[in-house]
Amino acid sequence: MRTLNSISARSRFGDAAFVAFVLVQIADGVLTYQGIALFGVGIEANPLIAWAAKMFGVALSLIVIKLFAVTCGSVLHLNTMHGALGALTLVYLAAAVWPWTGVLAL
Image (cartoon, rainbow, N blue to C red; front, top):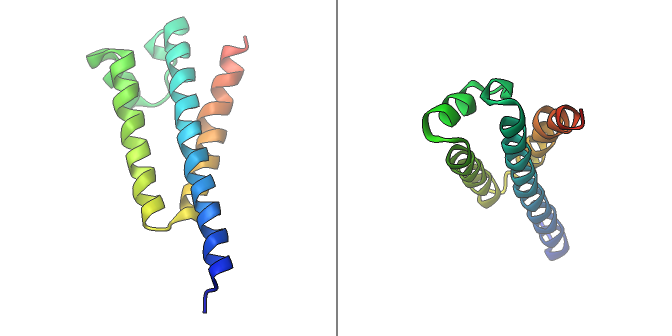
């Protein structure tokens, strides 16, 4: 049986996971924009983002793609899939944000 404290603690974790996910999405969007602005679309490793940036412009593409990612994260959060949301946050940090910081530090 779940107690009020366990539900409350789980909600805090879920809220923190969702906020972290949103912040990582924002960071990835900003860093991607800076990377493409400095080095061109060819620097982008994700072919979907590179294609969208060429077709619709960098800013619009990143806004739409990041809003879609946050929407998907919201679905996970609302379905209490906080572990998956936390794992995705770590994946984005390791596979997107961290590499951009290295590239942009050059």
